Length: 145
Image 1 (spheres, one colour):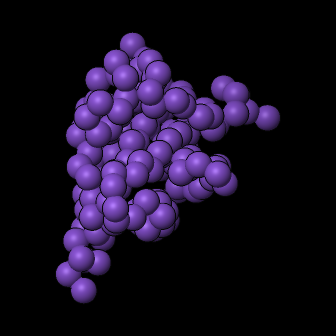
Image 2 (tube, rainbow, N blue to C red):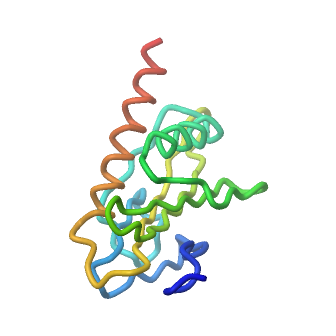
């Protein structure tokens, strides 16, 4: 039984995303991809194919404590992760969409949101910033090989 409903908040459509009015979410998006939703963080185009970027995101998620894959779309480049807070184990849903950006290049959109909170005190934005930094490191490491 879940006191506040299922921990996974489900899919999002980044093109029509409507953000909550409460400070409990964060959005990282390439320019022009998230419709009217204002992004907290900009995402660059990366010099890796989409399939490899998706694998790198999975590696970064696996490095994150208390984070698990809860959905992976077979025919589209979308995955969803559930992360739990350290003390109270409150669930956050992280939606990821991989976007092609030309030959051997891709980018991504990320949306992290809390299920049970009136404010997240910046934890979702901090998570996305950490993930983007780590993704960037991994891409640079691969390019340097």
